[in-house]
Image (cartoon, rainbow, N blue to C red; front, side):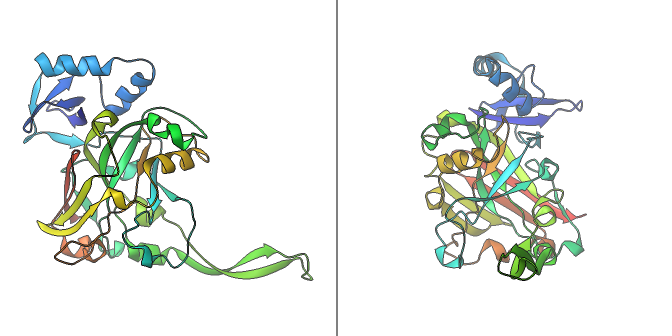
Length: 309
């Protein structure tokens, strides 16, 4: 089932289930998918309630609906860095395990909501990604059972500002212990970058509109993913190019951070260039504005206009 969170005309919010390409049905009793996931863990019969809504529930037009992020306040959003094997030559050196960063839930916006940018943010480009929504809590989850903790999949756009990344990168001398040194320390030339601004600014996390339950995605590693800017194809990739699989990432992440229902894991950028050339890194949304679309087969299309903040 395709599930989403919307804002109704009276200002309240609701969970909907897609009934057709143009309509959805409201599932009564849930404010958002955060609420549904919490009750799902405690034995809620959301699937039966969704079936009832599809049969005789209130209908809303998908052409007029106001989308919110499907999960509005996940406890954490994890991103997996450089997790695309289509461009292996770009990695000069790096870890042999998933490298992760955290985005704040305040960065989230729903489908159709504006991405709002300021000139001082510099270059900002899209990063189209498949994202996992966690359904069951767990720590130290074996890869063999990791997919049992996945509630569903959604579309994510991990907006990034290389300008702010450069500004927030330190080139410095790190202090390391050295018992052979007179003062017990040695200095090692190092670089470190902190992603709070360049990954986590407001509106840097478009997500949605749908979360598709895992049962309808038999293979998350065989999904076409495309990105367009003002209808110009920029990226045409496939999740088969993920360097680390969903199961590997869920397992690895849970060995350091306990996963909780509603957590979102963005699996890594679709980077393969379209046949027409170009690259997502060249789409400077702060300069070009316009509209950015990310589509994943079987899940849906996430689109957002870009405007000045």
